[in-house]
Image 1: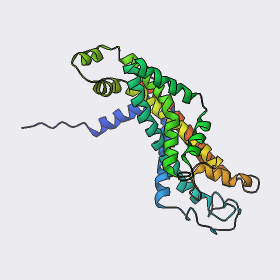
Image 2 (image 1 turned 90 degrees about the horizontal axis):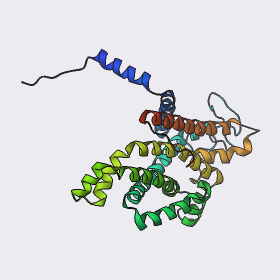
Image 3 (image 1 turned 90 degrees about the vertical axis):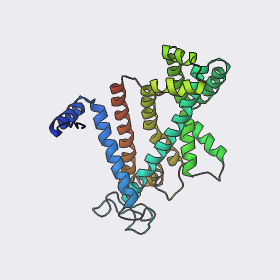
Length: 295
């Protein structure tokens, strides 16, 4: 006969409340902002007041109103509908690009830090060369090199974001691997005859998880800025898809006539970046790690 034990609901709720109160303030604020963005993005996928490319939704440049909270652009498209639809695009591109960079950078960095020797030397010289190029300049070079066939496609933006951030992640993962590789459990695994891949992914990776998690969150906070900058310069997603950086670029000439058309996507992009940064700061405090800002 088995005995089933249960945790009283009152005790469980008190435990959750205590954990929430002990959570760093920046983490809580950032989490609330990010949840709001996520809910907004999900809503924008299934419903918007107007189609994101629908022209003639009202009088062009008519300003904000209850029917059009963010006004209408120069060809009569509802800016609020475009803003809502663009929310999931920014989040998806940021997450996918950062995840690609994280997988590539973590794998190469851990291998480089553990193997060492000529492999580490060659890897680090390539990484240093890529890091010496500013984010935006490197992204533009890759987009131009991809050619017109891929220009403006989401897959290219994801690839560019991943490749731009991968070298920074390589450095963090390499440093963590070099420290962990000196531990006793790694030496024991080597004595058991485990291979390089097994040691890297079964011994080193789990023990570097905290550092890499903070790094992922940090790079994710930078991704919307890079994607927005590419869209603003005309190298991002092709119109009429409403990416927020592209929307700011399309309406920047209306800053005097109808400023609300620019403030909407601008504030959305700014609040998303602030939310990610606060979340990363709180996460680093909880895990006892310090993110390398600007690296």
